[in-house]
Length: 204
Ligand code: GAR
Picture 1: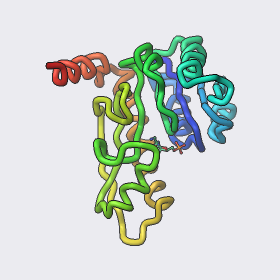
Picture 2: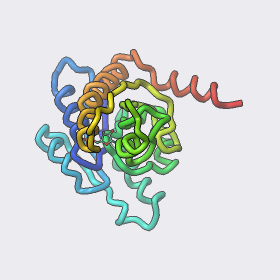
Picture 3: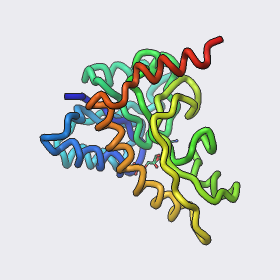
Picture 4: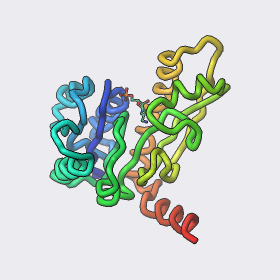
């Protein structure tokens, strides 16, 4: 049984999809805790499913590194097999990435390497993209640069606002994230092997 900590910053609809999927006894993964860097509304989903949560606010720390160390300590209390960033809007400090890699994944609302960063949907619209999508990837030290696990394309339609396009993306994203976690739990997706082959490909 794969144990998971999910990190969120916002409404947590991806978290909710994971909570619903993993509530099924036949699903080979469990969410053991949910962490946030804000008073995220999505923490209510954890409460509804009886899953413990924790918050680590950056404002309580003198620097990013110290904040990250506390976040890592909170995560490691749960000894998770996997950490999922699902709408976690803060860059994890290098020590956190190093400690959790490669069992640290992120879902991003664009077809990376296009439109990395915090405003991927807005940026795709501003660029006049005809299509965008979702990427689930292993987190590395960069901003949305880690090895891709899976991508899905989503059309941009005439008249789309940021909100409308974001919701269209999220409809696909929730299913893709659940499927990716299932693939990791069943061994169909091997994070260590993907991480290693990516390192070999990028190391001279
Ligand atoms: C998701 O679309 C996720 O990909 C995005 O935030 C949304 C959170 O939605 N993450 C990023 O943009 C990270 N760069 P949710 O709170 O409803 O799950």
